[in-house]
Image (cartoon, rainbow, N blue to C red):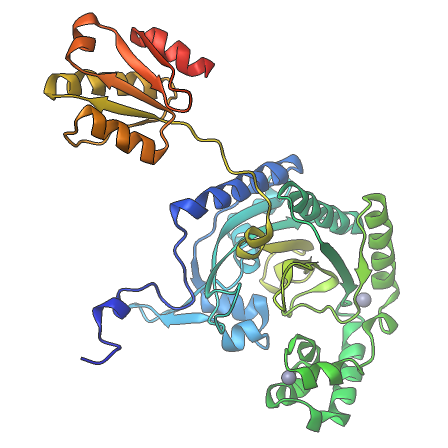
Length: 421
Ligand SMILES: [Zn+2]
Ligand SMILES: [Zn+2]
């Protein structure tokens, strides 16, 4: 038997994916709850799109020359011969959904959030998975730079609630369709002169989309990229004005930032603002939040001409540095002795649960000592004792495990006791 065929390996989770076990899930739930609460304070509502989409959606949206589309997509042909892709990012799905359902004709503001898995066939490494999770927000139809500042402030507010410290906010403008062609020409020229110093991938990018050289992680390419001209010198009047206003609004929100002229982000669709929140507590993969404006995607998809801006937050990374208080969880363990007591116990459990008390009933015949041993191990807050004597009296015993305090009473009295404690 070869190693690959061993059942153990075959039945393990797929490389680059990971189980989120009950011990960790409390953190995830807290993050999801805080994100939901925060975004709804700004008038956002949840929009859930499917995990699979037509491959063309990402080619068109994310961009044919982006690393994501050229190297990292999970694309397959389904039984009907259609090319489908597990979404590598969320933005194109939202744009598609708005056009498909004509959400732009409704009264509600076009502000959406979403949390869920994304898929990229990337090299698995620390803090990076092939199935990873993102919190995503998008707002449409707001061209004012105040909207750009507001989403940056919203991301910052969520990170503060999560106890994330040591962050830095980087901002840039990548121009628009008016002013970027001249910058791309200048980049192509600069890259052409230094072509031998670039990796084969970037040599190709120098022809197709020189802006993407800034995404390369090869140190030699980064060194070359540092000699390239800066976008700021090429921005048109409108883009320059927009960027200037963004910085003013960030000051109003008291968000410290650093202008990073090489921040282009790995996507083709950005226009004007791009930003990133990075953490000093993480290594090379230090980006917690990344986003920007994409004013042309909707009309490029054949929809209405509506501008947009959004961001994505990496949930795994944020959770790895979040400081969340462990949730206080209290539950009651049912200890019953014999069949009749079991029936009475189940009724009690049903009554307590209906009144919001978590009850754990394990259907195993145990003696009282074994019940208490088990309840102790599980760290139950209370043990409800149902034996023959208790049933005859119609009164039950309840033990508070932390204090050893024991009370006796009818179910209503016990419920009152549980609520007080
Ligand atoms: Zn411009
Ligand atoms: Zn390179």
